[in-house]
Image 1: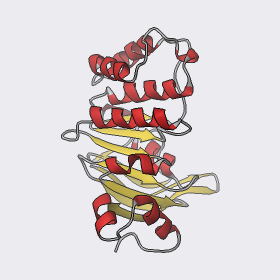
Image 2 (image 1 turned 90 degrees about the vertical axis):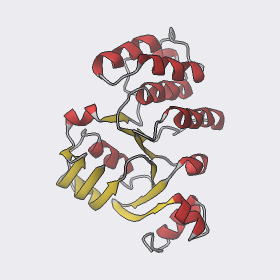
Image 3 (image 1 turned 180 degrees about the vertical axis):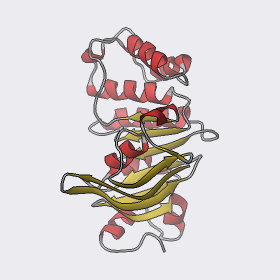
Image 4 (image 1 turned 120 degrees about the horizontal axis):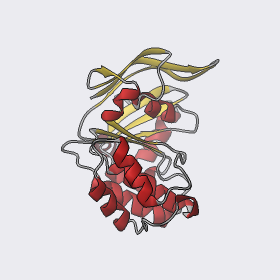
Length: 235
């Protein structure tokens, strides 16, 4: 389980997260949604151990999240952070050298599914194909927690569809938890077990998607709009 215990994160005078107290249960696909600047990316970076909270504590399986927590957490950034001179195959080899849980065959299977040639240089790939490659090497890790930060941002609908299918096929919810931030809510709503809504660094609501549909009789986007208009997400 991942826990944020009264976590705040400040960048100079800007408070990106404000007294967040929440836990993420195992074996689920959880969406973290909200407007730009709501704190979604900061939350994932804290869970990945890439940032430290200004106040509070972030725990992954009861251990404080720091750089060493990468043994348990596979994190995919919303920006490209690859060596551009690598080929796709060289990137796979690099990940294999860095992470003991990296599964090379699985990476190859995902790249085949996404129609990516291993001999291609990363700098020559389109944005959509770089997104596919990022997804492949992240999902190829056998880490208990997978964090995807805006994996569909700026991609055309056809590319988003193939990436969503990749998520479905290559996550093992018996042993893994997926936490994903996205603006493309409609495309992934069917995947999500649970949704957390952020605004200005605060949690407005946390609900199962089933509860949103049955109790509130809404889809996730309409529920988020209700919360932004002042409704409660914890009823």
